[in-house]
Image (tube, rainbow, N blue to C red; front, side, top):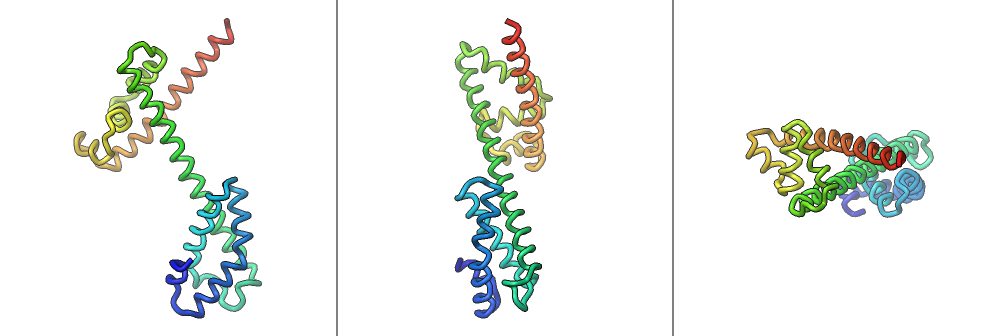
Length: 189
């Protein structure tokens, strides 16, 4: 909270902001919990929202911010956006962890050829266009950073990141198709 208060110009603004925070904190937590379904993440989203509010404190009605519908609407929108940002970041992180796990299993399977099913994952990666398969294998199997891949393949780092994202999407589609086909074969037995 101290960090938030240092963003404001003077003590009266700090006092007003603190009062505003106390007044809307419960509402903000309720909104964030509704979106995130997690207490800790909701608290993080509320903190992020109030950082944004502190940065733009001049936009809040100075006359009586506690009773202003404009202020309430502004805070609700900022909290919703912060919660959605937290949700998206968490979702991306979980997707990356899941894909890293799958590709890590593939690397292990390549060392142990007895795991035929995991070699299908490797084959799926290899079936991708070369630029996607290269960056996926270098990043997830070999453990290279995006910057190292960019240097070794003579590409821009942003291009590597884009190719990783596109490659993951294509790989996910291929793996979903394989899973669907496997399930259909199981239903026909």
